[in-house]
Structure formats: structure tokens, C-alpha cells
Image (cartoon, rainbow, N blue to C red):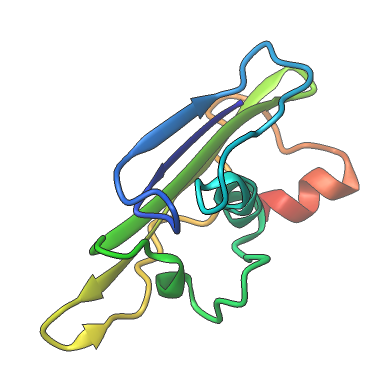
Length: 124
């Protein structure tokens, strides 16, 4: 599993976390270091919802960043799935802009849709 985020909450610059081959992961750090932001980014990539009280994706943009992007890739039943990046941006001259939705569907280049209920819900 790989998580790439830019401008998302505690991560104004691009950060990539590669969980490939890990069966157990501990996220450690000082208060405000971005531990919860990593979990929130995974949830946001999967469900386009945040555990944080943001009503719109653009509210998740890190302080000082003009835009945010979250992308998640993972393997399910031996098939690699990728959640397309979700982008949101600010427009300084007019204030925050509505999020740009550049795809909201899972990409699976050569495989059929998953058969499990949970997977079908995520892949719509």
C-alpha cells in the first residue's frame, strides 16, 4: 500500500508513505506531527470523507499550501487498485474555490470489478 499526499493537513509538501510488505505499522510522533493526518488521508482517499470536521475537501488543505492531493494504491485479492488522486485548491484572489474532482473511481486497468460488497461500494 502506498499513500501519497501533498498539501493535506499536516503535510504542506509532498510525502509518500510505502506500507508495502508491512503487516503491522506504528505511527509515532510528537503532537501535531501528522499521525492522525495519515489515517485521515487514507480514509479520505477511500471514502472522500474526513474524520476531521471539514465540511468541504478544500478545508483539509494544509496551512500555507495552495492545493492538496491525496492518492492511495493498495492490493486487494491479489489485484492492485489505485484510488485516483483527489485534488482541491484555493484561489487566493477570490478565496477558497470548490474542489476540482479529477476522477472519483477506482482504476483497475485489466481486471473486472470486485465481487465483495465492501469493494463494490468503494469502486462505484
